[in-house]
Image (cartoon, rainbow, N blue to C red; front, side, top):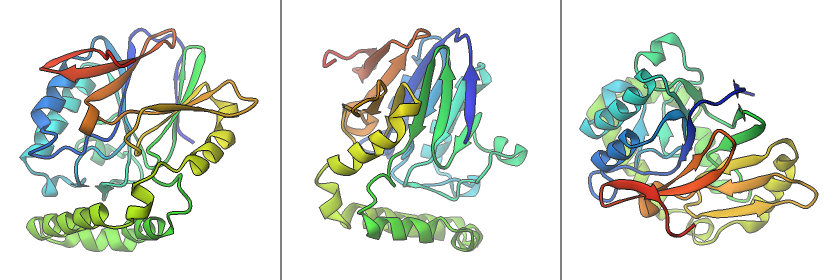
Length: 261
């Protein structure tokens, strides 16, 4: 379990999820401009699926990846914690953020599972959420195969252009398979997950599902918050030093409070 303790926050916590950046529907320039407009950022947590598909080693990066990483790098170099929670569209990320990887990735913290933050008097947890639906066995098998050490070792040895082509094919497969589990929100599984985790936190932030909702569990004061996606909504969450939560929206080049709160 990875925990960051911020006993006296002196800035703002931001939570972003599922941007699926590409050259058409979610350009890097817009995303980077949003990062630049974050006011007094203390910690920025990204909940995975940053790009449409992403091979983490730098030899696989395109201009899209370099532009995006520069935005996170400016936050990090300005003293902000930049936390990355791996999603299902990230491949070849390291298990640990070693000194070598810190020179490649602009993150201060990296997690391939859940991650915890003690924020003043509040306790938060974060996860991408792609493994919550335990009934999606086809996807879980696919992830187990593509995220094992042998597969990753072979993939790292492939030339960049070939690996990007294969990654593109994988992305197409992700879009066109398991439609049964993509057309509905798994309420039962999410509720069970909430009941299993909310006794220990004030809020549990989950990405992956591309909706904006809150889920409660009987007997628990904590709330599971499904974070709205950047891809279709251009939204993110803002948490004050005292734990007040607001939804922001990036619209017409400006980051402002969402009118849909």
